[in-house]
Length: 414
Ligand code: HAM
View 1 (cartoon, helix red, strand yellow):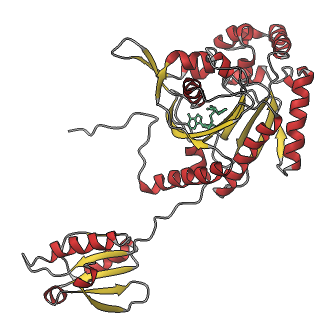
View 2 (tube, rainbow, N blue to C red; view 1 turned 60 degrees about the vertical axis):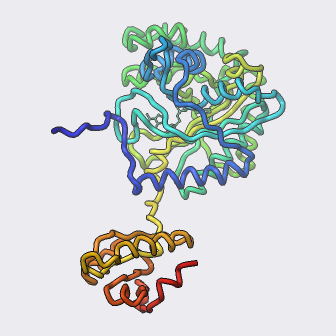
View 3 (cartoon, rainbow, N blue to C red; view 1 turned 90 degrees about the vertical axis):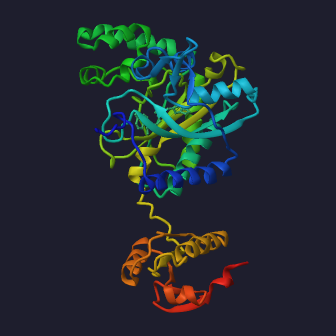
C-alpha cells in the first residue's frame, strides 16, 4: 500500500527542527514582554473579505496565493496568509483599540500562501507577528524596529541588513501614483505582464513589487516615492531615521521597498540576510494607519512586523536536545521477574522528582543497555539487574565520571 504523503509546500517538523521554533517563541515572549506586548491567539480561518479588504485585491497574496474555499454553510473562508488583518479584526471586535492609548500584541502561528515552493518559501510557513496599535508617532515605529533588533540579537542572529523606506500617506500617495502611471505609460508597457498592465492604472505601486523578471527590469528607473512625500511624511520619516540613528541601528535606505501588501503607509522596513538563498527577507513590516478604520474600527493608527520562522531557523545555531538526567536500564532478563514493572514505577518516581529520562522496557545485557544509555546522552544510568532487583536496590552509574553506587528502591518512595 502506498504511503499517504504530505502536501507540497507543507512540512512536518520533528524535535531536531521544532526545538528552534520553541526557542524563537520563548525569546519572543521574553523580549516582546519587556516591551509590554501581550500574546494574542487568533483563528487560522477568517472570512475571505477580511483579507480582500485589508491586504488588497491587487496584491499577489490576495489575487493568486490564498487558500480560499466555501464551507458547508456556503461562506467563503480563507486560511490566513498573514496575521495583521486577523489581529486587527480581533482587536476591533473586542473594542480594545483606543487612539492615543497604544496597545501591543504579538502572535505566532502558521500562515498559508499558495506560492511556488523553494528554499525558504513554503505554502505553510510560520510567523512571529507583533502589532502596536493606537500610536501615530515616529517613536512607535522606532520602538517596533528596535524590538525586532533586540529579538534577532537574542536569537544570536547577526549579519542582517535593515532596509527602510517611507511609502507616503493618503495625502501624497495620489501624486506618486500618478507619476508612476505616467512613467509606465511612457514605457513600452506591452512588455509588462498581464497583471501589471492592469495594475499600472488600478494600483501602480504593485507593479514595483512584481516578481516577473521582465517587469522587474522595466520598472528599474521608475520614480521613487521619496521625491513625492508630503511635508508630514517627510518629517515623520526624518524623525524615524534620526531616532534609529541615535539608537545605533545601522540601516540602508531602499526607495524600492514597497512591500507586498496594500495596507502600508509611511514607514516600511525589511530585514534581509544574504545567507539563506534567494528568499532573503527574514522579517518585514511597517506602519498601516487607516487599516483599522478600513476594517470597521476606530480611526486608529498602527505599526508592526512579522518574522518568517523558517527563515530565522536557517540562521540560528542548531538547538541541541537537552541532556536527560537518567536512562533506566533493565538488565534483569529473567522472564516474569517483575523488574520491568519496577522500572516503570521507578522512572515515574524520578520524573515526579523533576528529573527527565526514559526507559525502553526491554531487558538486555549490561553492554547493550549501557550503549543505549550512552546514546541517549543521559547523565546517569539507573541499572536494575537481577541482583539489584532481588535486593530491592538500583545501581546508579554516573555516565561522565564512571562512578557507581547502589541505593535502595524504597529511598524513592517519598
Ligand atoms: P510579509 O513580508 O508578507 O509581511 O511576511 C513577513 C515574513 O514572513 C517575510 O519577511 C518572510 O520571512 C516570511 N514569509 C512570507 N512568505 C513566506 C513563505 N511563503 N515562506 C516562508 N516564509 C515566508 C506580513 O506578513 C505582514 N503581515 C507583516 C506586518 C505585521 N506588517 C505589519 N504588521
